[in-house]
Image (spheres, rainbow, N blue to C red):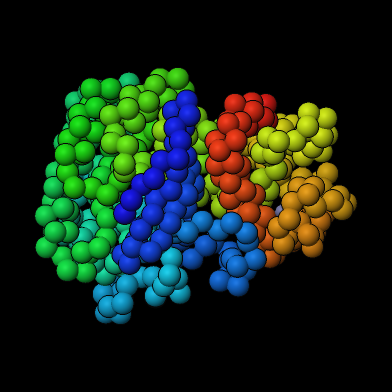
Length: 408
Ligand SMILES: [Zn+2]
């Protein structure tokens, strides 16, 4: 795997990873996001409907909690998860957690990490975790880590424990990884932990970079109160220590403004759970990322897409508090015959109206999820393309201003 940096402007990295994957044939552009999957498929979509979407990223994220219960089947199958799920040519990254499902805390120990699958808690030891990776045969996998989200004000002792455990898991996994014939061409992604404690974060980075990892996962920077200035400066301190030539991923960050804050601090790759999370709430991504647009059209776009009024009757206020989206369950869309987003080239917007999606949602038709997912994914992938374009055109500031304006 080779990392080619085209430019670094104000901390943002624009570039390509080449010769990626078990066969060394794939390329990944960054900043970028992954195609999010549960139980090995993009939620709501079949392979045919997935193909209707433009700019689908090369890397696919497998979420271990949604698959771990089936690892014995995969072991018996022997040919790896890519072929099993019908994505033999995709670049597969296996994450330890699923950002779209909450993971209860308090279950990790010095020897185990717990994840939650459909059938409940799954306790992983290093050897069980590695058995799963050997059955899956992904291209990249996140190393087992004590990645519990530590609340602000957590003691240094707890943060230290999380770093110690994570390093011990990494050493354990690396030892088994080295001996494994089937994981010979697979990269292990080292995890940086340490909560909000700068010293522990730095120790975590400095120790992890000494090990033969293919890239880094910056874990535990999300949460309700982020990105606040403190976490962002912590993130800067961490990325400043990382070697330039390896990719940096982050978990749990999906909102457009938060993505841009992280890109500015040197993060390359993001999970793609945000479009799915919005789909589950009956929401369509509607934010404008066309930084090249003249100011007049921009104002018009914003007026027609904005949906930030809070607390309509009968709808939980929480549902209405997501900027960057429109809530298609609202009465006002019942007879709105415009597309989800004007000028959107996705299959849903070219063929259907907001009123139709409203109708599908209120009648609980499964097609609502399919159509919203098609639009939300295409919109989100377009956003990442616009980040790369903006970096190339030296227009990141314009993009940032445009996104920030739509935050509330
Ligand atoms: Zn669309």
